[in-house]
Length: 111
Picture 1 (cartoon, one colour):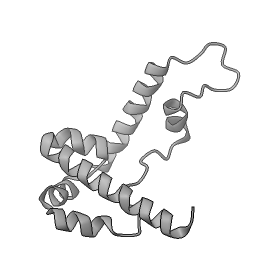
Picture 2 (cartoon, one colour; picture 1 turned 120 degrees about the vertical axis):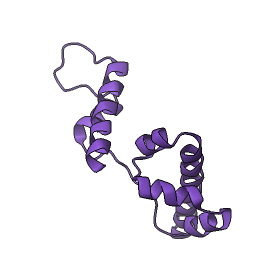
Picture 3 (cartoon, rainbow, N blue to C red; picture 1 turned 90 degrees about the vertical axis):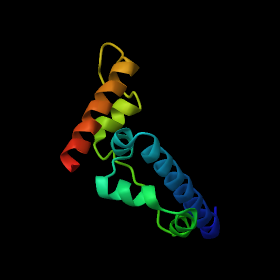
């Protein structure tokens, strides 16, 4: 993949993210804040953007969304990798629930 293709993919990801964010914010603001990890101010700004403004923002060559997961434990829970040497398999649903709880704690700290 060359640099032009990468930039095109970034722009497409930006457009998809902005449209999804705006839709979620308009549908259920509290859920959108939690799921996207946005501040109230960012949500208010995104909610009011016109289609032309969204297109202009999406054309940026910097990815606008980011991974909120920076903790190895959360990554392991989300990908269902159990600890080495574990004698019993980790329940995937429990792992994902645990990861969601950890991420919601990060969201609460950000507020």
